[in-house]
Image (cartoon, rainbow, N blue to C red; front, top):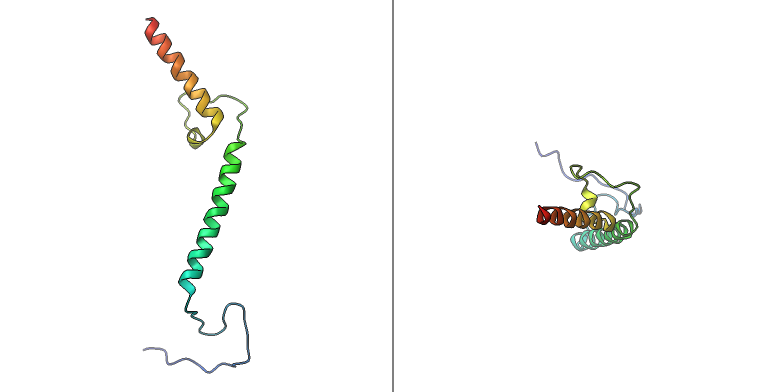
Length: 92
C-alpha cells in the first residue's frame, strides 16, 4: 500500500527545480525570503497607488468604499463633512 520505493532516475539530468525528489535543505529560508520580497513589492506598489488615487466625484455619505481608509482626498472630504455636521449641530 506504500506505492513502492523511489524509482531509479538518470543522475546526469539537471533541472532548475531540483530534478527528481528534490528537497533542498534551505527551502524554508528561501520561501521566507521570497515571501518577504513579494510582500515588499506589493507594499511599495500599494503605497504608490494610494498616494496618487483621485476621485472624480465625492461619494455619498452612505456609500462605503475601502479607499476611505487610505485615500487622502476621501479622508479630507470626510473631515469636512464631520466639521459641517458639528457646526450645524452647534448652531441648533
